[in-house]
Amino acid sequence: MADLIKLGKSDYIKANVSNSHNDAVAFEVKLAKDLTISALKSKLEILTGGSAGTMKVELYKGDKCLGTLDNNDAQLGYYASCDGLRLHVIDTFASFCFDAPVEKFELSKDQYDKRSDSVRHYLKQNRLGKYNEEEMQQIEEKKRQQAEEVQKRAELCVVDKRCEVTVQGNPRRRGTIKYNGPLEGKSGIFIGIQYDEPLGKNNGSVNGKVYFVCPPNYGGFVSPLSVTVGDFPPEDFNLDEEL
Image 1 (cartoon, rainbow, N blue to C red):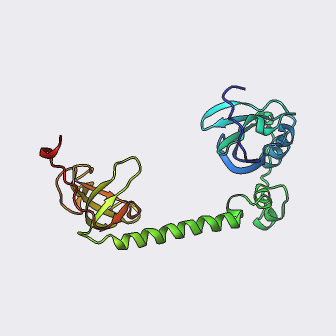
Image 2 (cartoon, rainbow, N blue to C red; image 1 turned 180 degrees about the vertical axis):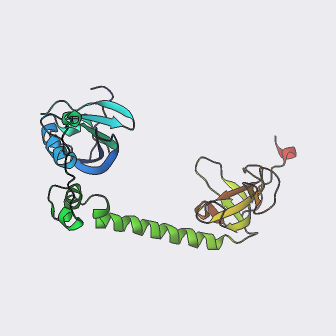
Image 3 (tube, helix red, strand yellow; image 1 turned 90 degrees about the vertical axis):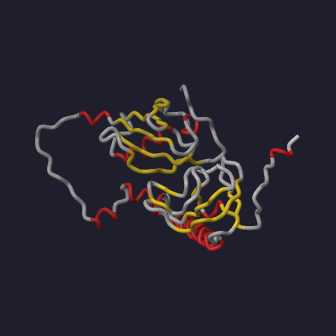
């Protein structure tokens, strides 16, 4: 198969599952790389309602089809081993038509919770997504720690203090803090800097709203995490002294 994903070190992958009924991503599943394609189809039969004996499974990366998982004896890791791919189930029974009206079948929430062949049950059993309490707690803890660090660094960014700004992909820049607070239409706290050199992006205004005033291209707004407050005197570039 062309364009196959290279094998990785992890024993599991996380992939999205979609089907030919709506061609949309339905949910994320965690699968062992040593799972045979035959066993994979049996799992997908439970999750999608298709038939393991007739379904075709295609592998996608975004909207690009990487190929078809057509060897039932091969392991999933042969085809793909990185997270973020999509398994698209094509059910050959999806094209069948019935003229007779079919009575709509509905389950109550309690009845659905008791089923052992539902998507919810599968996610709970495998502790995926919101049912992985430990993972969700870790995510929330990281968010809390980052928010605390942003607040702590923002409190150090006092207006008129000297600072040095470090943003990935840009040179280190020195300047003076001119603003500390929110920006209209943006979430979070931003620090407005008047740089010593024209290495900024604005004049202290964003989308027509003035937060401070400085010459064009001397102003910029960055996260408090990018600002180090301290004794940073302006760098003196005296061209007369250059050799």
